[in-house]
Length: 582
Ligand code: COA
Image 1: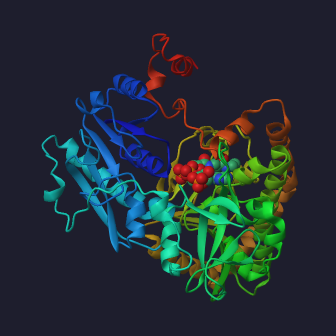
Image 2 (image 1 turned 90 degrees about the vertical axis):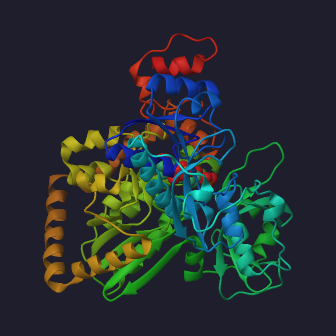
Image 3 (image 1 turned 135 degrees about the vertical axis):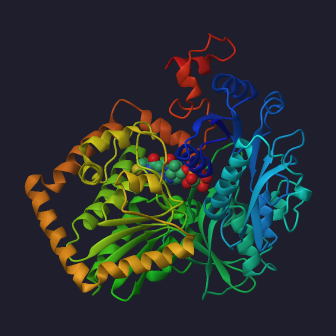
């Protein structure tokens, strides 16, 4: 079928749905919901049999839904309506929730139901639930709806008759007043629910050290206690605040400054404005600081598991350095396999573009960050006393994908989405030894296909082209169990010794053919131009990305309908015409 995805942005859910529909043989094109005229034009050009809206922030124009079946993916159970569905589900402590695929009609989220899929809730950030449970349920419900639509005989049902064991209701947009934390009276679980319901957007408005801020990236603290509402400790990036019956760490803050857009940055960095008060807080060092930063090491038998759950999967220079230290410590253990677990939501998204944007010299910070990433990659590539595994339960993009390729084995959960390219970030050349690692996996011919293909890949597709070794079915819990048994197999003496020997030989042979450093030097020669050269594309793309500048058009590699025909020149849409002519 010809399907149009009409979406606010190409977010993870839209990417996954796009890739799943394409893998199922459908012809899919994407249009960003920029304004009514653009959406109407996209429908006219693509002439879709079906329109799916995986992530919209406004209503579909009546002119479209009156003539075409438009399926809306709503992150709520049947009957639930409103723009804060998941926020309310977290705050209300729902034990189970769901995703409904309904048909667009006059009243928002009130159309008949084509399919829905439920899931048990976790006490987790909204963004984490969205990237796992909601995305899995949305894909399954959307594919079911597409199959029903294909029959041409199915009639969607009102929510009251769609078989759901309970119905949701219309809820208003959640306001900051609903999210407000009462530090004197709220218990730790309530505080966490409020913080989780607002993460990644819009955060919880509060005051810290005399600054108006939005709070993000909360984790529970298990030992420290203090007067409710007081800041009681700091670590590398986070500050710890006491609740009525415990304490929470807050890792990211956005300063609220009237008339100014702020970035979400490490809490200790934002609070530098009140340096004396910040420095008066007791500092937590060692593994506790790692915990607040997301680095964690566990051992099961003779295998070490290194977690690096960095906020949004982005790795700053300091985080790369701390992770490298943790990796070196892991290598010193009398184990056989080191498993790189990444983070829960993202395995890794490469260098930290927000930190770079906030630096005094973004070019200089980009340079430090990419070198720190490269140091980490080199340590993994050259490990000759352990086998290494990348266990990818979360998505990975750009440098994060190539960091995974540094490992000997790569296993991914079936829902993991890969964006193994750098070009979307202002034609960045990329480093992380990709020129060494990628041909090793996909051959010389495969390299341009991957680097020039700017679209997401499903784990099964990544396995099909040899980018990864295995795609594992099942949910997160099953994935962890499967990883443990696969890793155990690798650590068995009769498997481990021959594999380690073969790896040592390969590393030695590769080094004779071409020293590893020369790959890095050549990549960094290009990156230097990206960072310091005359072409500002990378800096512009990064600025737009971290400040979430709304899209002015849909990139041509997504909007297939705009690749087909040239539009007549329209004075009302000069930007659009420019894109088509491109
Ligand atoms: N640095 C800093 N922040 C990053 C990041 C990075 N490398 N990658 C993702 N993020 C942040 C986004 O800014 C966003 O922040 P928010 O919490 O304020 O919303 C959050 O992570 C989620 O990103 P989003 O794009 O909304 O998620 P997604 O799942 O829809 O898309 C990606 C995921 C990875 C495809 C997309 O974020 C991306 O292209 N990231 C950039 C990758 C990159 O170019 N890395 C640098 C080159 S090595």
